[in-house]
Amino acid sequence: MTSRKSKKIRKSKSRKSNKRKLSRQTLPRPSNKGFSLSSMGYSIDKNKNDRRKILEKASEKYGTLPVLRHLNLRANYQQWNKDTYDKMKSDVDHLSKSYKRVQSKKSSRKSSRK
Image 1 (tube, rainbow, N blue to C red):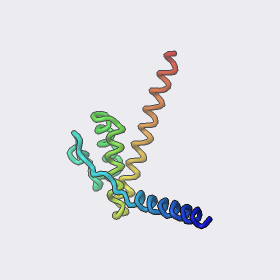
Image 2 (image 1 turned 45 degrees about the vertical axis):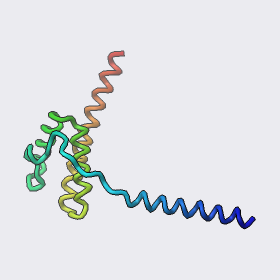
Image 3 (image 1 turned 60 degrees about the vertical axis):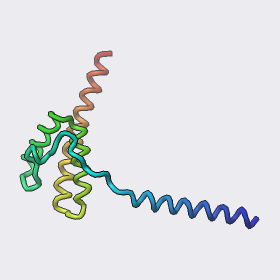
Image 4 (image 1 turned 90 degrees about the vertical axis):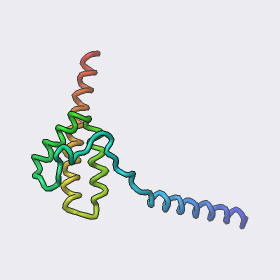
């Protein structure tokens, strides 16, 4: 009986160590795969409307989802700077809402064709 109890304890220890390993994972490095938001004029110093216009142009050129993923990753790297993080997260929320609108339009077109 004692050997079975020790096996259970070992299993629980391994689960805890797995949780620690998962929590210590780092974010992937951001890469500029063919585009850079700063080269299109995106800057945190600009006002909200200008930033969103630039993001809309970038999403037209490169696609909404890649720009959204890129901006979200950059925002997560800026968590130490609260002001910058908040501005970038508001831009991420704006892009995600526009992406949802585009996806709902596509799905309504598909359903109307049937």
